Image 1 (cartoon, rainbow, N blue to C red):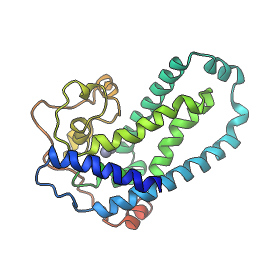
Image 2 (cartoon, protein in one colour; image 1 turned 60 degrees about the horizontal axis):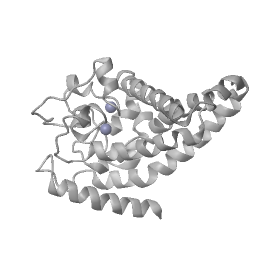
Image 3 (cartoon, rainbow, N blue to C red; image 1 turned 180 degrees about the horizontal axis):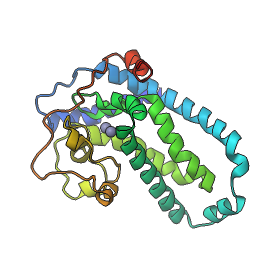
Length: 249
Ligand SMILES: [Zn+2]
Ligand SMILES: [Zn+2]
């Protein structure tokens, strides 16, 4: 029930913002693929949560004997702010490199291509991800944090932030964010990542652009936005076909 309320609230808030301040003025509200993305929105969180939980416990059973209690104790005895900052930095770096690899390794790209198949972007397009990709990302972030001794509370705030940021940075909102672009991933920043131009789409991988600035993949020109989104690769339109797509070749 809370996801229905959440969906309606997001639809209302972002629907109004995208209607009042559209980035792409010609884009229809019920764009192509809108219904598919609604299915992604409702089913993915169940599949992602269940999958992450299941695989996390599998990894725990296999590896929990190898953790260093003294290291975990040292991590946990730090002040909360320090723990949070460290966990945040580790999570961001893992996300950045995983995302970059997803564009380079064909095996990972098969899953990530689903997310890049949207030819039009709005807040709901953020829901279009293959659950398997998100399960792997979550595990790649959560398991090292657990192994090092960070508590669930430490990265709880990060998870909340991680859920809201994509909704914002995919939205069809035409504000310019000259300063914010360098701090968090804004629509201006992330839309370039979805540009259907190979040179530009290999930019802006992070949730925190400072990481892209550090590794030379930051791209936000002053007075321009992408003309075409999506990829040339054919990705089917239906939810089930998208779920099966990575396993079909
Ligand atoms: Zn990408
Ligand atoms: Zn995206």
